[in-house]
Image 1 (spheres, rainbow, N blue to C red):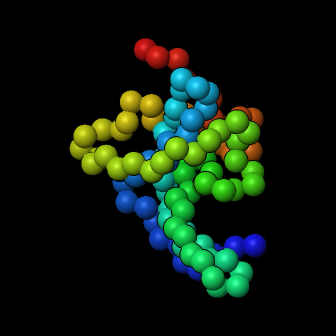
Image 2 (cartoon, rainbow, N blue to C red; image 1 turned 180 degrees about the vertical axis):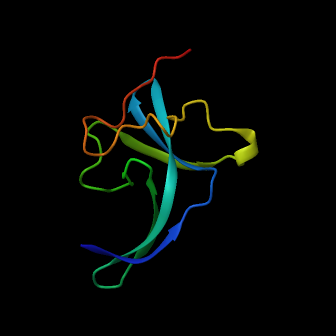
Length: 104
C-alpha cells in the first residue's frame, strides 16, 4: 500500500492524457501533484490527479482508460485539441469519465 507524503496544487497548463480507445485520447487538466511513498519507504513517485479524480495506478479509474502521459502547454497557447472542456468534464460519481468526444 502507498501513502501520500505531500500534495501540491498543479499550475495551469498541466494535463493528463488518457487513451480511451485505439484512435481516441482525452486530456483532463491536472489539479494537484501528490508525492506517493511505498509503505516501507522504499520507493517514491509523483502522480498528477486530474480534474475528474483519476491518476495513474488508481484502483477506481475508468475501466478501459489507459494513462498515456502528462503534458504541459502554456496557458496562453490554449488547451490540447483532445482536452475535455473543464465545465463539461463529468463528475466522478456519475457514469463513465473517459468518453471520446466527436471531432468538430
